[in-house]
Image 1 (cartoon, helix red, strand yellow):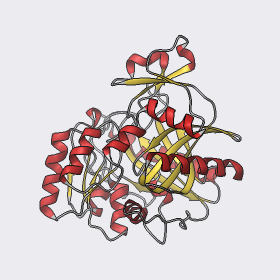
Image 2 (cartoon, rainbow, N blue to C red):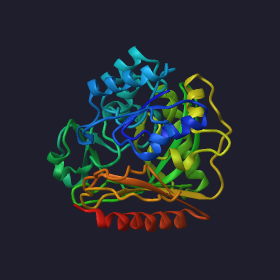
Image 3 (cartoon, one colour):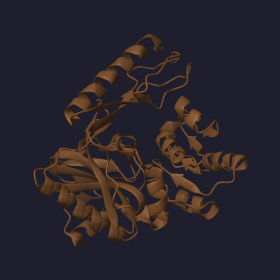
Length: 367
């Protein structure tokens, strides 16, 4: 199975558990990705510029020469590249949402209109700068991960095609769900947090499951996901981002592809990749639930340029492990850290401690 994403390790690991041979292209080529793919990997260049169409096709064609692929599964990085998704679907079978569906989901005007029809709260959006920008955010169309979000007062720094969304209050909660084009099954909810910088105040920091939600609120969010999935004909693994304040909530966006919480929701008895493939074929699993206890993941970002990553005996609570001697620019991901605990609060606390440990290991490798 061809796997294409900004980072393909989590998809590749889940695909391997499901019995597939992953053929991976991404921007990192981390050591564990190479191990999972048995070296069947092509690294993309220039993360800051995003996925280049020609480079991607060269990588996928090269991988296709190694093993005849059943098709391609796309992770993050394609939200604003629907023409690229269309071209991929013409060359290989695309297991996931179509280019047309992704374009609809990531269009804020379309999503706002659908939410209004479905009585799902959605923050006011505008394509023109509002009169009181201090109460608004500026976002890039098709953006992901939070790094592109700014105050509307700093809209010029977002880049790309932007839109404005009125600020609302609440706690960030994401729903991971499966869909078959008509129905949806919520696998679980995660609480999410930012790891801000002066220039990226909403940069994604990590997630923990389960989210702390009252049963009624969880039911309301699940019902909203059901209506959205049916209305937009979503298939496979997707996620929906909400802000929750008691029983009040707002949908912020839908991520129409497997996302950042794959690892913390991976099932002991069956891989999420297998569930994704089944849902794409119209076979929706409605029985799987995530394991007991809590699990958190957090991204470790380089605080300074790292000229040469040291050779480490990486602990098993890390993933996306950079190869020894590789260089990492300040602000780029170093790796991912995990923690299991009896409560979400404890799991998040441990991941933060482990994030600091990794940064300490890197501190002697600054340029």
